[in-house]
Each structure stands twice: as structure tokens, then as C-alpha cells.
Amino acid sequence: MPNVDGFEVILHLRGGAKPVKVLAMSGNPVDGYDAARTAKLFGASETMAKPFDAATFLQHVEMLLAHS
Image (cartoon, rainbow, N blue to C red; front, side, top):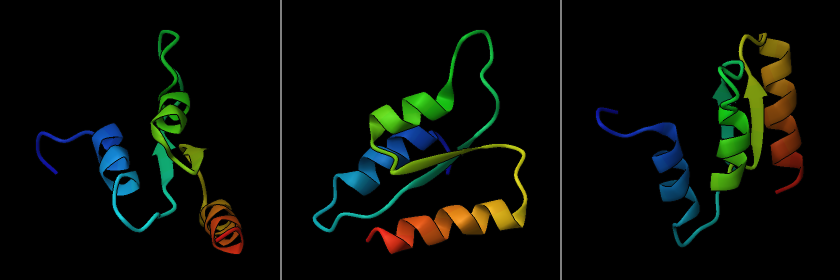
């Protein structure tokens, strides 16, 4: 999505009338900046660090769905 970062997407998704679960994926912290922590502050339900495999991704999705 041009001109929109992931944090803005989280705010948009979490600000709707119907609550949704948000799984944010980010790279490793660079120069002390931790995007995963920031995503949680913006309302992400869960975060994952890249790289990850399909099994790890599915675990996170299943966990979010189980807590719906």
C-alpha cells in the first residue's frame, strides 16, 4: 500500500467497529528500534520476527484464532 506503513494499517484495523486480531511481522531490531514492540503499542495482537517458517506462522495464527 503506497504511502501507508504497517503501524497505520494496525491503527485502521483496530479502530473499526468490529475488533480484529492483528499479527504483525517485522525484522530484527536495528539501532535500538524494535518495530515489533512498536506494533504492540499500536495495537497488534501478536508479533513475529522475520525470518520464520510456515509452521511458526501457523502456530501464531492458530493461537490468535483460539483466543477469539
